Amino acid sequence: MRRRSLLGGALAAALAGCTTPAGPGDDLRIMVPNPPGSGYDITARVLATALGDAGIARGVEVFNLPGAGGVVGLRRLAYEKGNALLVMLMGLGLIGAEIAADAEVTLADATPIARLVQEPSIVVVRRDSPYGSLDELIEAWRADPAGVPAGGGSSIGGPDHLATMLLAEAAGLAPARVAYRRNDGGGDLLAAVLGREVAFAMSGLSEYADQITSGQLRALAVTSEQTVDQVPAPTVRAAGLDVVFNNWRGIVAPPDLAPADAAALRATVAKLDTSAPWAAARSRFGWTPAYLTGDAFGAFMAEESARVAGVLRRLGLHRP
Image (cartoon, rainbow, N blue to C red):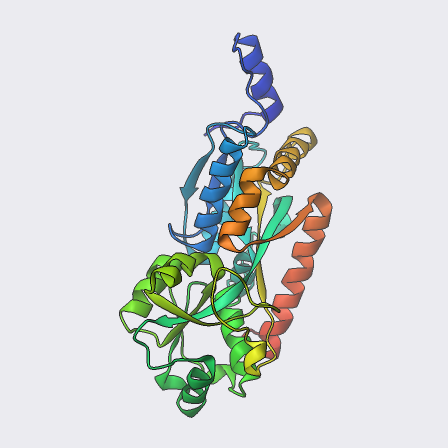
C-alpha cells in the first residue's frame, strides 16, 4: 500500500537525479466506487486522460471498486488515512447511497478536493419502443405504473432514482407505486433497456450520448432547464412536468491528509479545470463547469446530504 506524500514524492524524484521531477498528481490513483461504464467511471477516465494531455500529471491510474452504490469505495477511502496518492471520483449518487445504507463512514470523513461538473439526466428508451414521446410514456405510466418499469443505474437516493421519482411525482404518481429497477451502473442498465427488462431508463447525459447518436437508444427528454446540443430531445419542463434536475461529480481524498498534500491536490485539479483538454471533454459529454474547491465543496456536500434526505422523506422513501 503506497502512502507517499505528494511533496515528498517530488523531492525524492529530484534527489534521485530525474531530469523531470515528479509533480503533484503524478502516480495518482483514482478510485471509482462503481463498475466500468458508469458515469463515475467515464468521468474518471476522461479526467485521467485530460491530466496527461494537459501535461499536468503523469501515470494517473483509474481502478474500480464497486459495491453498495459506492459505500464500499467510501469505506476503502476511509481506511487509506493520510494517503496523498489516492482520490475517489464521486457525486450525488454517493450522497444518496450513504443515506440509504445508513453508512457508518460518510463523506464528512473524507478530505474535500473539488466539485468538477454537473449534467442533466435523460429519459431514454430502446429504438423500437412504442413510446415516441415523453407524453406517450407518461400516459402509459399513469395508467399502469407496475407495467411500465423504470430503470436506473443508481441505488435509492442516487441521481437516477431521484430523477425518476421526481418525474413520477410531477406526473401525479405516488413514488411507492413506481416499479424502479436498480442496476449496477450504466453498463448493466443499458443491457436492461435493450433486453426489455425496463420500459425506460433514467441516466446521466454522458452515459448514453453515443448510443443515442448511433440510434441504439432514443432520448425522450432531458431534465435540464434548456435543451442540450448532445441530445435531440425536449426538456421535461417543456413537456408540461415541472422537473429540473442536475447530477454533479467531484473528487474527495482520504481523511487526515496533510494540509500541504491537500493543497497540492486542489492545485492540480484547479489546473485541470482551466485546461484545454478538460474544456474539450466537457463540451463533448455535455458537462457544465461546476468548479468548487476545498471547504466550500465540503459545505456543499453537507447541504446536499440534508437536501437528499429531505427529498427522500418527502417522497416517503426513507425513514425519518
